[in-house]
Image 1 (cartoon, helix red, strand yellow):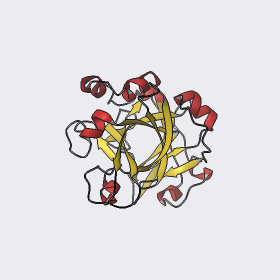
Image 2 (cartoon, rainbow, N blue to C red):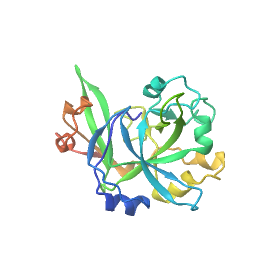
Image 3 (tube, rainbow, N blue to C red):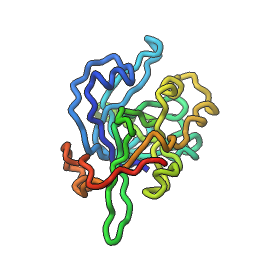
Image 4 (cartoon, rainbow, N blue to C red):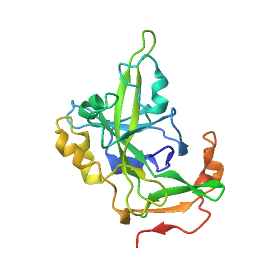
Length: 229
C-alpha cells in the first residue's frame, strides 16, 4: 500500500521529469498524508497531449458518493480489481493521472513497535505513481477533484516490509498511462511491481508517524540502506 509519501524536488527538476506547462510555487513536502492536497499531473485533450499540474485531495471521492467521507478509505486502488470495482472503474477508463514523488514510507513490525522506512529510487530521481482522479460535485459549493494511488504486489526487495507497493511507472510509460485513448489491456500491463534495482530503503525516525510533522529531518536515515543484490 501507500499511506505516506514525499515530494521535495525543485520545480525545474519536476518539469524536466514530467513536462507540465505550469510554473507552480511548490514547497517541499516530506510527509504527504491522506486527505491532504498534493500535486497531481493530468493530460488535456486540447491542446493534445499537454500535461498540467494541479493540487488534488488524496483519497478518491467517487462522483456518486453522498459526501466526501469515502475518500479517507480510498487512498489506494488495487491493480487487480481497478477495472471492475465501482469506486474506480470509471476513473480507470477515463481519468488517469501521475502522482509525482521522491519517495514513500512503509512500516514494519519490529519487536514491540513498528519501524518506519523510507523507500526511494537509488539514483534519487523523482518518479511517478500510477494514479486515478475523480470529480465530486456537492449540491452547494465548488467541485472537489481527488485522487488515489494504484498499488500492486510488492517486489522481492520490498516484500520484507509489506506485501503491497504503489505502482511506480517507468518514464517511458507516462504517456501511455495518460493517453485518453489507451485500451484497458495495455493499461493493465503497466500495473506491475517496479524492478528491484530501481529502489532502496532505509529506516527513519518514528516522527514520521505524525501526519502533522513535515520537515526535512524526516528523511534522515537512522541505519544502512537496503538495496537489491
